[in-house]
Image 1 (cartoon, rainbow, N blue to C red):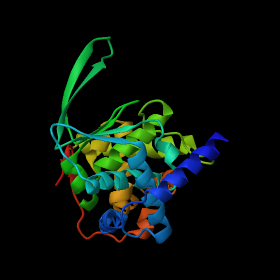
Image 2 (tube, rainbow, N blue to C red):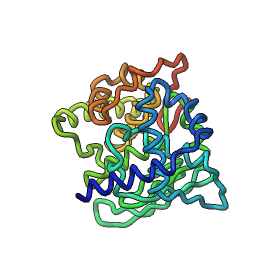
Image 3 (cartoon, helix red, strand yellow):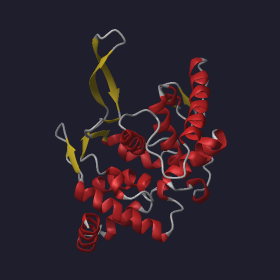
Image 4 (cartoon, one colour):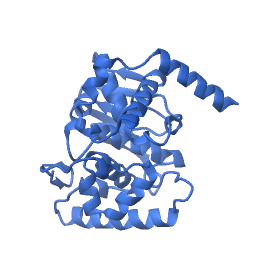
Length: 268
């Protein structure tokens, strides 16, 4: 009964508050959305509208944002859950938007119990049971870059955290094998780790070698931003992500002639 009422409320809202046509037409020009059919685009538009209704986007440091930027965030954020349902994001409420990359000061406890502060400059961060932090400049550039997408990266972390912690293994759908998932991602993680250790370049961002959670997030952003690269480099990972996201972007997207080259810490 509760689910029926929630769906009814959502349908009524979407019927009364659709995304403005002019803004939506601009979104349709994004390379990230190439290949989506009319039904998928309509579903994405509804997800984006509901995202803007249910999530708070908080600009900081004097940043002012308009409806187009809000929609750009929402479209990228909801592409991964296109066929998962919006409930996949029901455990968090806020996006905090910085003008550019920001400093994060996080506490962690080492193996002997000492507490340390880690200071990092980031373009995005997903906080467990908290907000998603994003850099506006990276949000704007992400849909046009054929190798990475900070918004999708952080959304993948949020989906991963639904298992209780970001460990590279989100709750899987019925019929998917946890053993198969772990075997496939462990093999990819080890291969990426060897590349990073040897100072080699890679076809996907070698930040994936940091830990299993980052491996999932990087592979997820590549799955949507450069699906053919992931399919060619790690076909088993691609297959698992296709099952998880219930999408096949390589089948709907053309191959890019430009292919980014990734090194440890960034792309060139």
